[in-house]
Image: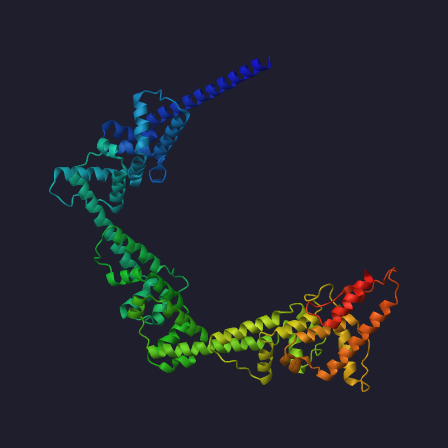
Length: 570
């Protein structure tokens, strides 16, 4: 029973699908017949029936274009026919409206671009263009020796007519193009002449417009600095669209495409801008910083002008010069070479000064607060809590930024010049300093070089010991620091270079010896205390015992201590 139901259901679905397809085909055929007999396709019926693309009278045009006479962007008949034919093909339908309907829709579909162009042509200017073309062709046929028989047509009409002819398929040309080769050639020549006249007119108009005032003057004088105040006022006016180069490039493209001669346009001007378009665009943008541009103009007669030019002005001008094409440099750069050399030297000095100012400003950055205090005092424990907080937020930023800036100064061949000896000392000391990174790791309690947990509070504890040892005449330093803090501090010291130990650590060898003695004593006491604790009892879970704060390259004494603690904890 189940199999029978499935079969019946399949038949029902197939029947429904077939019925749906039939309905769609009926609909498409109805649309095809309606289009063929409809007003919007009247002109095309006339063309197809007569076998002439330019057949039809003004009545056909008005009926076809209807209310869309001026709306040449909407060839409704052609678009609709193309859609219907696509539907008929997709659905596998047969055209049931007869050969007239079939011939109409398939012919229109196969030449849809040409018929779309014909719609634009016919609907232009209330059909006057279409009528004028018919009259011109008739005149040319009656006067075959008249070479200019098409010249009275407007440029738009000629361009549209060429578009219709070129859009026809090969079969379409055989079936609907009733023009002989001589007439087509006259149409093409008239169209080219019209286009070329239009291009020459546009070129001249652009040249004389405010947007091109500066470029025009530069081409005339052959000088990048030819624009005076009046010229700049035209081109750089806020209301002027600075599209001169863009317009000229487009116009010259037309000259090239249609092989147009330059008749009344300024050939040297338009081709100079076309061939060096990027240069002229950059020059215009630069020149409209009018103060700088006008100051540079004084350098043509006064080499001392360089002294009064701002760094930014010279830098921008030299960037323009550097990017000029070889031809533009030869044709447009009239400034004396020695003056340009002076500018380059002056800009180099500007850059060096800017970098030195940048370097000096680093000393006042918050992330350099701790480094600044240490360099000033020559003592690792010189920084206060504010310095530490500021620096530890970006602990390696000071060394990194100083090193980068000094590298820039060096790469450009500049000298480090600072207003005070201290600023120079600060930069030289911090530059590329791994010593400061070692110290900030210790001070900031980063734990980056530790095996276990960071030694919180070690900086303050060791600071107390160092200051106590400095003032204790009996050589007995305060014993207030955890033993692992002492190990961490001693290991940090061992990582420092000899110069850092001498210049910024601020702890002499005798005092370091005292601290090492204290560390050994603390270590021995801790070990002795641990030996008295029964191995089967739980050990005190104190921070100093569990921290295991050992550097990777810790001293042998520290390693011995950690091993003993680990053994006792097992």
